[in-house]
Length: 334
Image 1 (tube, rainbow, N blue to C red):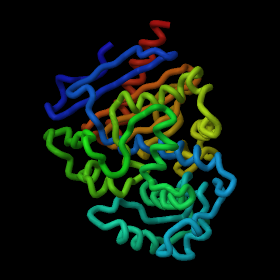
Image 2 (image 1 turned 180 degrees about the vertical axis):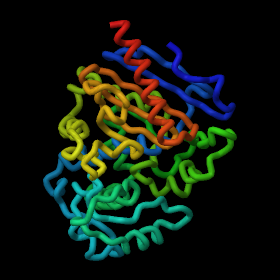
Image 3 (image 1 turned 30 degrees about the horizontal axis):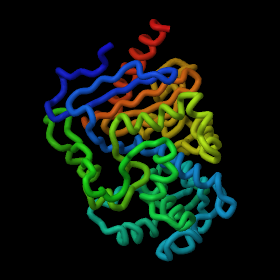
């Protein structure tokens, strides 16, 4: 089973896809550097959400219904007092501003964000960067550790995964530059994805990086019953939140459709995968077309990472083609 189109890709592209089924690796294919480090972009979303849930469900002094105002720097003022942690995770806080910091300092970015209108009664607005950034500030205060340490302790390390987050550490391999599909050159619209000054701010909804194998450590554990049953509490209680149907789970886009909607990094739903009902899984996609998913019922996990930018519709169609071929292969074998 060949899934990747090596002959159609620019020479600067690296890709890898790993498929695990019932605890065994059944497919592992790569183009370019096999063990490259990739910017995970929106594939970061379920991992950060899981880290936040892992922490919150193990505490009595802070919870999903805690207000974030008392946990934020003074610059945010009283307008954020009505926002609760649950609303940040579901993108229903009423925050209207959403952007990466660009070349701004973090202090300037906080001042800009603090002036955002906040009205929880208005129609929900998708704010994965700013909403989860506010959440990361609150979690820093609540946990007493910085964002990088928080993500590692509650999101990566329980799975034995070595993913990067926050400022690069000495000796760490940098993520591959994200390249344009037409030219093979660096994609100017995503210059920030591997910029050290941006990574230093640790954007929780899009700032993780790592290899395909380390990403698979997380999703394989979530999909495989034997591994999932050994997860410690409260991490074990956190996982089902990611599997809840749209409109009820912590991964909804706030629009009553399905988790995160089609181009926002879906966490669940056959629409995102382009599959028939009954083949749902939770995971996430990114602007490079990379995606990861865990299907607990079938004990199927898939990780596909790429440094090639694809348009949202192209990414959807590629996910659909890849998953159709994987499912057809598994159906034929079993």
